[in-house]
Image (cartoon, one colour):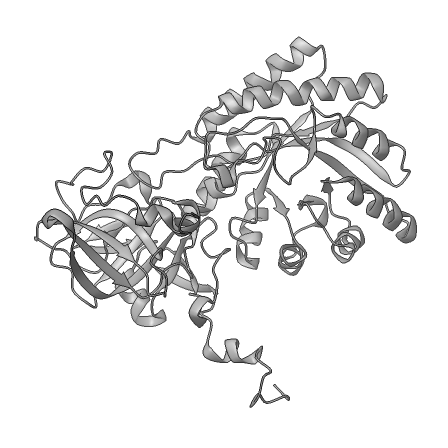
Length: 471
């Protein structure tokens, strides 16, 4: 019998919450680790960047993503400074807009894109093409052509078919493509299976153990229009343990030395990928950039020395670690429902005006989030609640378990921290929901980065009966 798609939400009933979740002494207080650097409560009202969320909702409506510009820039600068001998690529897949792309460049970072759409955003933002890396396991001819026309700094090659495409396109366009080979090192990161990307049974890259990665290097070197820069390894996402990077570096540097010996090319670069974790709840304990830089530098230096090779120019690709904590999502409560379960247990469902259309990660990855009452203070005792969305899915859960004030009522505002990575990027129009705006805040002022979708936006693409063809 097949399991339900949202099986975790239909497992054995427990209303006590996870063991790591503790009832707070003050349900109004923020846990600083989970929030952006400027977030604070003033008389119970959440402020970010000096702007109260009550004012933001009054002006822009809800739900809304609130992006802390100072926090984003601070985290970008922290990676730049800690990894001073690295090239730091911001992974645009986490969240990308023209505004964010400009911030990235202004903070001295490079930009990683993985689709023609993300490349177009980078182009519109004026990101120098040489500072762009282009990822993707199935780049189209059109995407590769545009990348070559713009002169992107590097293309991360993911298959033999892509090598063939680039070989043909570089001849036709008279361009040279600077490439890295994405390799799978056979390391499974300690993370959710759907976001662990370096073990063998997955779609990304060339296997080291099978010899495909070595053969890819041979083929690339044989093509006049391709310049082999180095190897690229990415072991997963939301990683807190550097041991996975250590094993991966050992295997990738072994291949680096083998290519030098057998193919006769000394590659100047190596990319260790990203995947650095952030704190979504109090159970998470992420490393700061300085600690990561120290650990990764030591790992590579020791492995290079053991192999008798020079340390190549290193690069990393943080995305979530920069934008994740810099954004929160503000919702309005629509209903509060106490549901009686077996043995007298009661589950309190707090329904908000968003859900899996603006944050699919809970349903998709069984991800954990936190939440706080954001529009007022409360003296009511804390109550264990489940924050759910408005969609026609029982798995439409935003926060599985959180202690919130027991006097929540419709119209209250709830804010969820740590939503900068992938929430807006993966947002959908499920149930024809309108995707929320992204509002950046700084020094008491707010700016619309991405506007809220409208019903006209939805209908403009619908060319069925009754549609106005001139639209």
